[in-house]
Length: 204
Image (cartoon, rainbow, N blue to C red):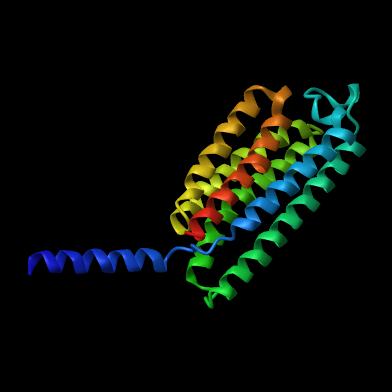
């Protein structure tokens, strides 16, 4: 009787835990975002190398005009990434006949948005100072913090994904001349790999 009581409590705890988590993440969205990030990296390398590989005063090479063009590229990439994730995740929840806008979604978005909003403010400051190269480690670090914060309300894989982004962000911070490579690996390759991992788990 006592063992049955413990099993019942364990099952209730498991159900409560699942009800507070958003677990219907689309693996395809991770792959698509990774490909988008790699495309943005390629464009940035071709057109904005002189501002991405210059860490001092903008008067010696990098221009304010190029800096804000780079910021526009980043904003477009971010908007497209958000649209991809929302649309594909909504399709995933609809396919499984689940509610998209429920409590787990609210919790996930809140814990994602706070670190991302702070990171956005820091990024704007760096743009105002004409130091765009420092955007690369900054975005990796705050994105990693956002994933760690949100990992309690979604798939456990998000915690590992966040740790990867933090590690790459720190490497980009200390080896700034390789920052674009670390950024491409974090937002591009890692997203593709995690998208494939989620797809494989969902198909089992």
